[in-house]
Amino acid sequence: MALLQISEPGQSPDPHQRRIAVGIDLGTTHSLVAAVRHGVAECLPDEQGRVILPSVVRYLPPGSGSGRHIGFDALAAQVQDPANTVSSVKRLMGRKLADLPGAGRLPYAVVDGPGMVAVRTVAGDKTPVEVSAEILATLRFRAEDTFNDDLYGAVITVPAYFDDAQRQATKDAAQMAGLNVLRLINEPTAAAIAYGLDQGAEGVYAIYDLGGGTFDVSILRLTRGVFEVLATGGDSALGGDDYDRALADWALERLGAGVHAADLPAGERAALLAEARRCKEALSALAATGGAVTLALSLHGQAAQLAVTHTDFAAATAELTQRTMAAVKRVLRDAQLDRADVQGVVMVGGSTRMPVVRDAVEAFFGQPPLTNLNPDEVVALGAAIQANQLAGNNPDGDLLLLDVIPLSLGLETMGGLVERIVPRNTTIPSALAQDFTTFKDGQTALALHVVQGERDLVADCRSLARFELRGIPPMAAGAARIRVTFTVDADGLLTVSAKEQSTGVEARIDVKPSYGLSDEQIAAMLQDSFATAQQDMQARALVEARVDAQRMLDATRSALAADGHWLSDADRDAIDALLQALDSTRAADDAAAIEAATEALAKGTEDFAAQRMNRSIAQALAGQNVENL
Image (cartoon, rainbow, N blue to C red; front, side, top):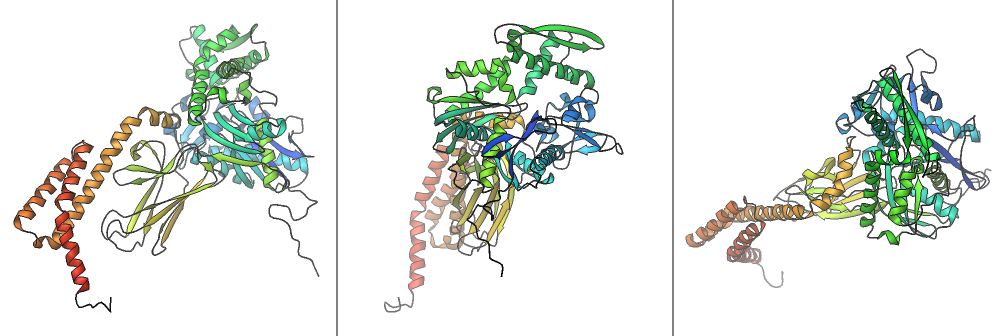
């Protein structure tokens, strides 16, 4: 008789056999896979001993062998075949063409697809999800070859400022690559896990993460294995690639070319950007105070050279560095902290090797940043530690991860107002609920519009999804009770449900928004919420006053239609005059005047309302005796 094998929740059935779980840093410029081996997180190398995989895929014509090159092989062909060599695809995840004003600068053609943009290649149109899946599958095969076994699952990192569409696109790419996604976690949080466990750090830390294509900054509190994200922000369209372009444009300006890198033919543009990157990396390897690097370029067949110093590079990229520091200030303000409250600054991402970046961070915080761990590897290492725990291999570990959502979530209410259900910087996973009611008598359905943003008006926020709750029993306006619940899972993905309390009728939706949130929207949402706070407050007060006025008008007219014959002509004329006054005032832009007219109608109909109530009670009691009651 076979015995039933029993294990504790979260542990593998066989205590002597561990599940193989990996952490993957899917980066704009390069990607890595890491795993916990012999109790230590380490990045897994390829056959040549290289842990980094360039996030580049080159597509070949049909019938030419494998049909694609991935990683270093693709990177080597970037200058010769830029139209079919896709790099920095992370910036295209979950975007439409209208969301990419800089699409013309790319060396390959980008076209609109049914859900998001696609890259036009000789092998056909390829979506960012497909390209990312090629990179993830390569990392998966590397891990399976290392362990000579199948993977149980993977934790994949995303920029903290990735919105719901971009996170869903990343998850879709992982599933296409044959990976079981244990969790998506924010890149700064993964870095904090690696530093917190390896260095035994406690206190408040800033995570400054500047990668090839995205920038994140997060403020975290580390206490005895608890990693609590206090606030997060950044720019999903700012990274080392932009520093390359800025240096290339500076070189063209110095040569008097009269063009930007984006205006060059694809081959020349790719060669210039590759040379600018080489020059940038060579400068970073030099001492911050001295030396120069030669930047060689070919313009319209003419060769030219320029000597580039640290001062030149700092001047050419000053605006980009300042953008990162502006984001740091915003996140500190969100966390309600001063720069002096930060014990240390963790530098993440290969672009943080640039002296101009380290100098700016040190000048702002008044202390040198932490660079103990390899900035290229730290995110993958943290993800591997989290994956090992989620796979049940370290059930005794005391790591607790408390992440947050970057932007508020809410519903549209009458008048186009936003009712926030989940405020930004709420710890996830999380579930929050709020009760709503109907606006009109006999209303049997409720349309729900889910939005994301910090403004008070729906028009100024981003639409995520719409759905309907039907089957509400017909009642007087305001009598129904509909509970709307927002559930944000550990991956930062949203489910919204609505339930009518008396009947139990329910509707729900998994929010998978139409892909695409522009860089301007991401960067401007928080800025607009501060800059327009007074304006939004006034607009909200006006809309609320108009909604209350309309509710009062509807209720009074309904009562007059049913029982207006009880009134004397004088009383009826007085109420009609108040109705007309409120109706005309409601169209004005004066919230105080609308509220005053609403209050006047309420007082003017008090006696009428009392009469109606008395008659209703009298009718209910007619023919009854005390014993029956």
